Amino acid sequence: MVKNLYVVWIRIDETLPWVELKGTYQTRNEARKAAEDLLNCIQTKIVAVQEKGKQMKAVATIKQ
Image 1 (cartoon, rainbow, N blue to C red):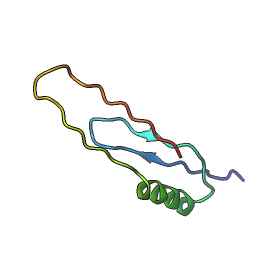
Image 2: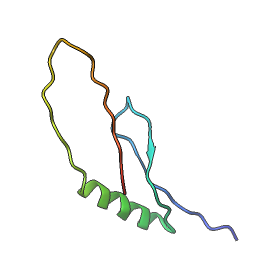
Image 3: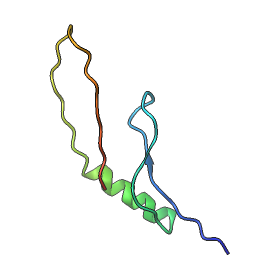
Image 4: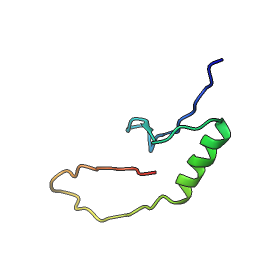
């Protein structure tokens, strides 16, 4: 019998691709709990940018 393993994929918004987080889980509930834990510890930062100027490139890294 083949067991299913589950992974967590997240998507920040429609313009960015899905990102697979590290780790595999035995059950959907374990994967869901891991996703909830990640969402509870996410940090955000809001920065000011000039209206005219060089276009900024966003870089995102996710650690679990």
